[in-house]
Length: 564
Ligand code: NOJ
Image (cartoon, rainbow, N blue to C red):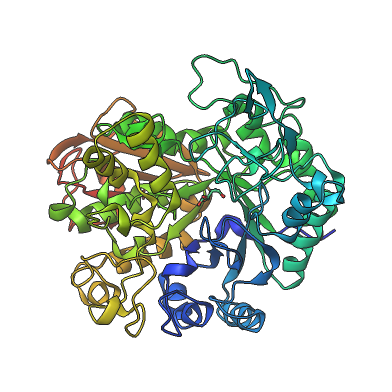
């Protein structure tokens, strides 16, 4: 049993989507040598750990979230020697490494699945969830009516047979059968393999789908948006499976685990991270990122709702405080860029909004997760046609909209563009040179964002108003301020539809975080109990010297006050 130091409570995690970060060998695809060349940049920002989206061997039907060999590095990213060098270079700089673990499903090209399909008597058959179809009026129907998270039936027929396999994502991502102890043995071994290489923890992809309700049956919930979800979200053995991973492997190392949750039930969400549960250290809860779309359906935009955002961002901080640990997230490889959403007039207020969002998010309680490019205020791309979008989900949804719901193609494209994951996956913008400095000229796998001549690392670092330098200041302030790290969060002005105001409090010391989430100047009055004469401005994205009980905050102005 290793001593658990909870190092993650002081950590700042930077997420890299390897395909799009830095292409060292100029083949159009980011790679490990490219990443190594940028480690100083990441360290200087103030990050202390890096989470890598999947680096493993994969046919890339879902760009690495379909793993064909959990112990191999994708050749386009480099070799295992490159990975070992990456580990060593990270270690030199005090950066810990967090690996993405995709354990709900494998690729259909994984040796287990290939064997399972080739030989019905193979032991690997039971590594997956395979069932005979149902015959009805001479037709063969899938075993249940469950719907995949990527649209369409969650079952695919095995060629030449009447059997189907379950895939909660793309058909090339067959779900693993966690009921089978042999599958869990394999998973434990895989995790040990990476921990022995020195990785410090894991991000578990859609972890709360691992356990399903058996026997499998139709979902008769009439109002349920996604048929089957009540049988595969937070399933009956979830807590047990997580505890098992801890007992059998995680507890032997000083690790950090963060589970990416899929629409979790709040009670389960709390149990997953409660310290005494021995399950996960934290989860990603994306509730605040549904504040400008309908029920989290990214492609159906709706006017930004600040009340919902505040509840989503601050609710877990209040609810989980002291019983577990929290994460703070604005972006990842599945989201649109934060400065291009929430009703923000990006052209006019990009710097203000990028710094505002960073301040109000990362001054909260929990570990900050910063997604590549967020630290220079990268924006959504101006895609003009479906062929520019490489994400299979954009195409699945487009097909569903145009074929099943008969939306005109133009409308479907505009809706896809609102929520496409592709926005986050354009190459990182390093400078205004060839291919934005991503490589030496080979066409990148995903087209560039045409804003790169104006928005890039070199320009931002030299600008008077630099988003990167603001992040540096913010992270440095957090690092040195125990109240920012450990203080309890309290929401003020909960009903305000324009202002976000909260305090953090630790042993009688207080910080007050104030932000005007709008493009108009707003009058703001200090909440009761706070006095202008006893507050000092510690960080702000505008110049502010004047402090009164009542102040006017400019568009997207955000301030951290400290009580003195
Ligand atoms: C969540 C990942 O973040 C996403 O990119 C992926 O498509 C799904 N899980 C399926 O693995």
